[in-house]
Length: 324
Image: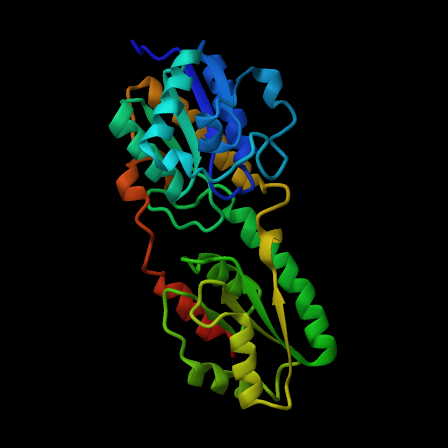
C-alpha cells in the first residue's frame, strides 16, 4: 500500500506544447486515486519561493488544447544551491506533499536527481521538450507540434520561393539536436538539412544546388540553430558560390514553441501523466515515464538526460535521395 497521499506537479525549462495536457492528466489521475493534488508555479523557482497551490479537477478544465503551461516555467539559480533546495523541501513539507511530478528536459531531471539524493523525495519525470533529445522515449511532449509548426511555415515560405525563383535558408530550433530540422526537412522536400550532429559537406550541397538550377524553381535549405555555421553563414556561403541566386534567410525562432498541441502530443502527455502518478504509487522514483514502441516505459534520470548524439542515418539518406 502506497504511503503517498499528496502529490505536486511542476513544469520547468523551456515550455513545450502539450505541457498543459500533461498537467491535466497528472492532477486528474491523482484525484482518481484519492490523492490531494498541488501545482507549483514557475518550476523550481516557485518551489523555492513557496508558490504552491492546491488544484482540483476544475483547476485543469479547458487547458488540454492550450499551448505553453498554465503553471508557468522559469530558470532557478537558487535551486542550484543546497540552501535553495532545502527551502524547497521545507515548503513541500509545510503542505504535506509526499512526491513530485516534474515535466521538462535534461536540466529538469538533473535538478530532480539532486533533490532526490539530498532529501529522499520520490520524483517521476515527464519528457517535455520540443527537441526530442531525451533517451527513454520515442517522442517527447511538444516535438510533434513543433515539427508541424515548422512544416506549415516552410510550406508557406516555399510559395514565395517558387514565385521569385529564390533560395531560402530556414533556421529552426535545435541547439544540441537536429531532429526538428531532420524530420521537417524530409517532410518539406528540403534540398539539404544541416544539423549539429554531422559535419557540413558544403561541396555536396553546392553541387546539389547547381544540379537543381535547371529543374527547380525553389530551393529550401533547413539549418538547425545549433549547427556550427547557422542560417546566416550558410546563406553567405551560397551567395559566394552562386552570386546570381536570390538567397533569403528566415529564422523561425520561438513560434516553434507555441500553438495548440497536436492530437499526438495531447495523447502522449495524457498517457505519460497517468503513468507518472501511477508510477509514484507503485514505489518508483528517479525515473522518467516515456513511450517506447507504443508502450509506457520508465527510464532512470541519469540515462534519460544523456543526449542522443547519433542520428538515424536512414533519415539523412532519405534527404539525399529525395532532393534530386
